[in-house]
Image (cartoon, rainbow, N blue to C red; front, side, top):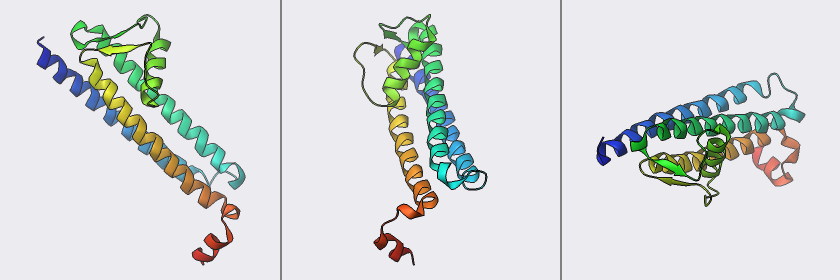
Length: 156
C-alpha cells in the first residue's frame, strides 16, 4: 500500500468512527431528553443527565480506542509510539487524552493514524461542548428555582 492510499484509508476509517460517535451522542442526548423529567424526579434529573453523558463519552472514547487498535494492526496505517499494543487500556488511555484535548507526550501517533487522532480531538471538543449546552438547558428546565429573579421576570 502506498502512502497516499494509507492516508486515504485512515481518512475513511476516521470518517466512519466520527459518524458512529456523533450518531451515538445524538441518540444519548435524545434518550436523556425524553427520559429525564418523565421518569425521574426533578431533583436528581441533572445527576442522571451528567451520568448519562459521561457514559456516552466513555463509549465514544472506547470506539476511538478500538479504531486505534484496528489501525495499528496494519503497519501501513501507522502506530502509536510508546504504547503496549497488547493492553487495550493503553489504547483507552491514549484515546481519552486525545478526546479531552489534554494533549499527549508519553504516547505519540506516527503515520496515517494521526488522521484519526486529529478527528478524535475535534469530535471530543464538539461533543463535550454539546454536552455542556445540553446540561445547561436541562438545569434550566429541571431546576427553575435556581433562576435569578430577573430571569424569572424575563420568562413571564
